[in-house]
Every structure is written in structure tokens, then in C-alpha cells.
Length: 420
Image (cartoon, rainbow, N blue to C red; front, side):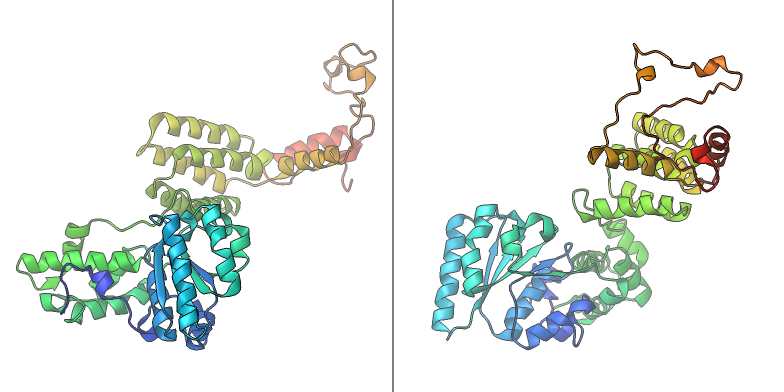
């Protein structure tokens, strides 16, 4: 008999590999992880992915499908003594079970400090246990390199609405584990909308379904509608981690969309950052860098516009700052592009780092002699040496205002002539 106080997401956990939804790159027939599980040869591994994508469920299916003992510990609350007890129990299970190692499941493994992680090394190396760690933080940065080198990392992804929909259908009709006893029906359109609103988080989708269906049943209704879902659980769940991969992935997508002159994509990623609660100043800093690095001298007004937008956004704050940032992003994405100044200064720095340290020509020093004052000439330019050995770092682009810069320099300097 089911316990109604047990959350629907817990009750609906898949009981077999075939019931597991999502992660087809790992769990479809013939996919790597499923093949390893079916062969009973599970490696020590880390399941890395955002909340609600099936990490814990997968660990439990690994144990059930292979018949191995499962020892569980949470790295957030575990003490050193508990860790020692887990290692000791794993050794006993292996000794008593004919050499078959238990699965040691450490939830949120990255919360273990370096010494705790290192304490697991001997047991992993000897095969006293098969370590399965789950983490929402990138293990390539958060897990000790020594431990990571002994484990395989499997990346789990947010689920699509199409992958979540069958589970929601099953939950609506299932009287044993689902909410079938509520006698509330739901169309595929409503369930699809609910699946779309959960940000790829299966747990969130089931939690929203249970809350909204319970509301309908409690008020005497029998049909779940989008309006009922909205009244019960509100707007969509926006997946965003300001300190994790989302932070870097979305700002990278915005930058590359601006660089690629796609204002619509740039606006979308800006909106995702804003909706996720990203720090406005962080976005402003990236916009300032973009203006100099990617638009540059093709449109010299881009940097002042970005600077003005950064100041205005900081002064006004949200929600009004969204309009200011949107204007700047659209302008930068639509502007002609040039990275000539960026390439030029890096080229000069590279030579300096190699030891190319030229002395300042005598006539350019404060106490030097022989300097020619350019403004004494009607052209406001005179041929004169400004380096002991001439180098060319800057190559003018051909778009926007930079075309005029190139033409002006070609009139003055032979090193900027065509083909030089």
C-alpha cells in the first residue's frame, strides 16, 4: 500500500532499466553505460548532471540489475567515522560475498574535502568497493585529480519534454504508485506544457503534476487544465546555476551570438541570463569586452555605447536595466565586426614576452633631441622613426569605419600599402 505522504517523484522511480527515461546516449539499447550494467561490469564512476535527471535512480538500478549490495552516504552530512564505516563494511561484503564488490554510493561527492576523497583511493584502487559518485558540480574541477583519474565520468543531460511525457502519462493513470486514485484526467497538451515548464527536471515535473492534480481533486474537479497548473505551481522552472556550468555556458552563447551578428540569439541568451538571476555587472563587463574585442575599430562608437549601457544598467537596476542591456546587445550584434586591435596588442605582447625589448629612440625621450613635431606640417604628419626596428602589429580591417582608418594609414606609411 502506497504512503500518500511519499512524494510522487519518489513513488514513480523506475524499477527496471526499461522504465528509465532519458539519457539515451548512455542508457539506450547498446549504449555504453547500459551495456556495462547488463554485463555486470560497472566501473567506479561519477554521474554528473543537474538535479532531477535521474542520477540517484540510475545508481539504484545499477545495484538492482547487477545484484550487488548498495551502500549509501551523503557527502554533505557524512562524518569521517561514517566514511570509515562504509569502507569497512564494503570490505566485509566483498570478503563474505566471494569477491563481489559492493557499490558505494556517495551523493554530492564534491562536498568531500581533499582528505576525505583521498581516503577512498586505496579502496577504489584495490577494488574493495565500486565507487559511484553523483554531483551537480563539474567533477573535472571539483574532484581531486588523483581520485578522478581512477573513475569514469558519465554526463547526464536535462530531459526533453518528449522524454518526460510518458512518465507523466503513467503517473496520471497509475493507481498503485501514481495519482490515478485522484480520478483526475489530463490531456497530452496539458502534460506536454507541464513537461516543458520543468526545465528538464523530472522530479520537478512530477512534483508539479502531483500538486496541481491534488488541487483539482480537492476543489471537486476531475480535469487538469493549464490554468489549474499555473494557479497551483506558477511560472516555469528556470534552470540556472550562477556558480556552475550554466553561468559560463549561457554567457558564452551570448558572446558568440553577438560575434556572429545574430541579434535574436543574443537577446535570447541575455534573457536567459536575466531570468536566471545573473549579476548585471557580470553581463555589463562581458558587453564592454565584446565591444572592444569583436566590434573594435569597425565601429568605434560601440565601446562608448557599451560603456554608457553598463553605467545606465548599473544605475537603474532591474527590471528597467533589461531594456538598456537589450539595446546594447542588439547594437553590438548588428554592428560590423573587427578584432584587429585585439590581435595587434596580443602580437606585440607575444614579441615582448619572447624578449623583443627595443630601446626608446633618442629623439622620443623627454630629454632627447631631433624630434619632429607633426602639427608643424600642414598634413599634421611627418615621416619619422618611432621604433628602432620597425614592426607591423596592426592590420586594418575592411568593414565599417576601419576601412577609412586603413586608407588614411596607407597614405602615410609604406608598411600599410596594399599587399604589405
